[in-house]
Length: 353
Image (cartoon, rainbow, N blue to C red; front, side, top):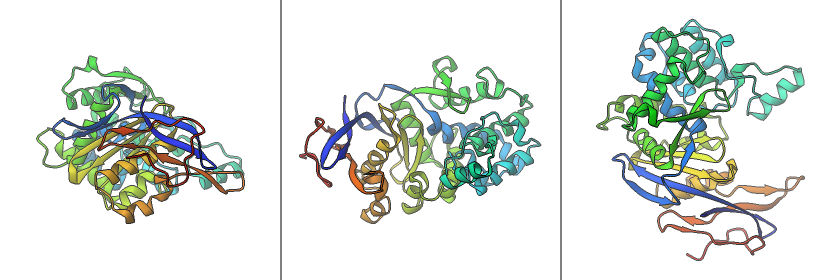
């Protein structure tokens, strides 16, 4: 299996993270790949900007006066900050729903300060704190728009979920029976697609306006929302948000659970799908930054700004850096690492090529 990242400790390889990568253009041509591009993955939260097409194309944005910033939170895996919660509440209020209608469960927010504040107050998080509450609010808005029942909107056989499944099928020119679904962490269905199919969907997001497909306008608006409000997509100080901000929209990153990371690269009209086999989220970060470097999308200034994800530090319990997560592949040369645990690998070490 292809080695993409090694984790070091005291200058020695301690762990090895394997995975696949697929880079596709908006014409559906695979430009680069490592591993099997036809391997199937659950999209998890990386599917949110794709799901948002059903909302944008429906006309619900215009009917309910949903802002571009509110569209951004529908695409987000937010940290539960007050700005995120206000946007979700605003969407729900506009469509005549409330937080009680959210079916995403009681999940603690991913922002540590907000998490600690809730614990200190002895409060259990309400569903609006979930990093998926924006997506859920968007689905409730779709239910209101089409006259579907709101209750049970998270079930796989609910009309709004069949609409989402049909959207994926149309985007990929498949029948709905070809779209395999499973259950995501936030209770919603999650599509199971190949890395190639998902990278192609991100290439459509990268192309946006001007593509020949019928979803070009919706992809264009989603791209605009994500690049205009990067802090809403996750939160300042996270890779998703900082990548969009520091690259000035040249790279749009979106995390998914279990080692999924996807990129849309507008200027090159490319989509990227990364899957780390062991599901380690931090291992996908240096892979994403390395791909952007190799493709000439970001310069050294941007890499420096993204340094804590380009070369994530391994720390001891006192906060001292004792190792790093190093990318050990070249997407352009189709090269991957061949390391063994215990091999010498100092900081800044690199494969032979």
